[in-house]
Image (cartoon, rainbow, N blue to C red; front, side):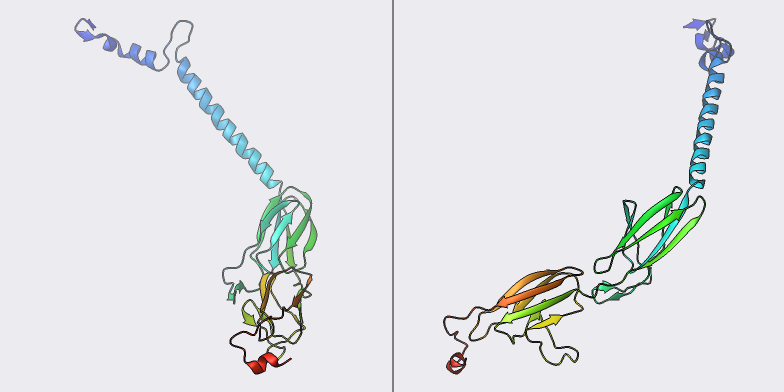
Length: 244
């Protein structure tokens, strides 16, 4: 539409601006929309400030618990919440496991109060502790676990005097380890978990094998009842077969 050769929307720039950005209308004071935007913005800033202040007060009212364990890699239970300690960056690998060393400090924040802590590592005696947390303070715990030394494997065979392979390696006599150990005997310094026990056969008896699971604090007994052969194997000489 045209009005005197000019477009209608450009008839009066001030009127167009007021209509677009909060101009007066029926029942509305001039600039009402602009004031509303400013008010909403101020309320938003106030809400963010109050939230930040509340978070700051909550965090300032908390305390810290710092825990180090030996060995590292322990499970730490703090009133039902489980977490773990980590190895230091310079920890070395010894055979198939990390070296036994102190962990990095584990830090958790808690509200003031008393907390029960339990530290567990497979193959070690579990330890428990109780700590009191105070606002703005740090409670430090260094917890060293003792290795369980009474975990062992007892092996008996009928007939006796047999060499035994554990996880496909022949067990040797302690302490010199020059000769193969023969049943009955006990195995110490053995890791927790699943192991394969095997006794080779000979001219008179069939081979025997079994999988056992060792657990900390237990003595696992294995009794191998060897089954006698009914027929002489081809590799066995007549002389060996006739020997008792």
